[in-house]
Image 1 (cartoon, rainbow, N blue to C red):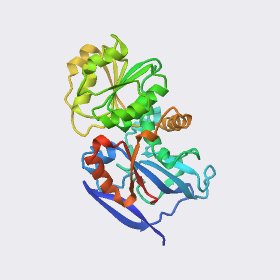
Image 2 (cartoon, one colour):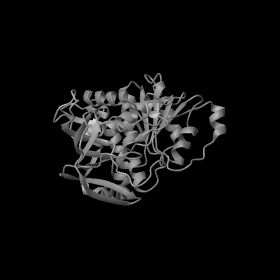
Image 3 (cartoon, helix red, strand yellow):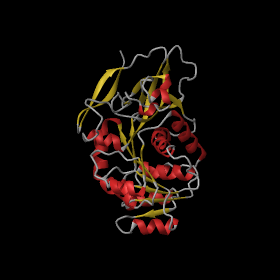
Image 4 (cartoon, helix red, strand yellow):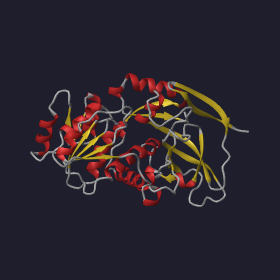
Amino acid sequence: MKSMKKQIVTSPRNIEFQNVPLPEIKDNEILIKIKRIGICGSDIHVYHGLHPNTEYPVTQGHEVSGVIEKVGKKIINFKLEDKVTILPQHVCGKCYSCTHNQYHICDHLQVMGFQAPGTASEYFAVDEKFVLKIPEDFTFEQGAMIEPVAVACGALAKIEKLKGMNVVVLGAGPIGNLTAQVAKALGARSVLITEISNFRREIARKVGIDHIVNPNEANIAQEIVKAFGKDKADLILECVGIFRTINQAIENARKGTQIVLVGVYSEKILIDLNLIQNQELRLIGTLMYQKKDYLQAIQLISSGKIKLEPLMTDHFSFTDYAKAYEYIDNNQDKTMKVFIDVDK
């Protein structure tokens, strides 16, 4: 029987690679040869034991691209060698959220790489309902970045009238950068992004963000007025997930501003609820995306409205997963999107 390598995080900071049998696929399943896996902030939380909704052992990998190796007997919409990505959500289809077009917050949601087995293996068998074709001219790196672009699309889908808005994005890491780019692509009038890393601010410049601020060197409130005028921002998106930035969002909002929480919070945060009440701020959570957000992400990348290449900074081989995490830990101000090259 043929075998393959599979990554398993057995406990925080401990990664093993096991040789396991190549998956046998059912009639409605597809076997995908995994090519690229992107590492995101949530993966790093899992590695460090800080993710609030993950138990061990777990196989990671939810930002992914690959090619179809084999199809089940009932598969008619996919063929061998198609380039694909994978929707990582398992949902029940029966709870209130699922039956009211909110399946991405299913009561029994399981996400590949967190509560369900992820794609960090040489081959991955999956039901065809989770598989999306990607354009043939996409690189595997672009394919693996559809998921984080979909995160941005899902967050901005919470806003009814984005067109013409002045937008602040706090944090210019991969998700913050992509959120700012998607906001511009979907019609925001102007976007201001904050970031303490010189490296990440330079990438924000390369992708065309309108206003870029170092909050360690400039007064955010003054910079918002300078960029947008006395009416300040219509929308603020917090993309870091720490005490400092969520409070910056609340303190720099005008009355009635919408604030979307995009960053992943690994600890409880103390915020000024009195200020939220008195300012009538709208604090909006965003967890995940839907299939429509994936399709929108593919369209935005295809159109050239989203620039991904400046964000692609590093590659590691499959069995160097731990080295990739160590590198990110030691070079946080010099990295953006780090890829695991499963096929190398």
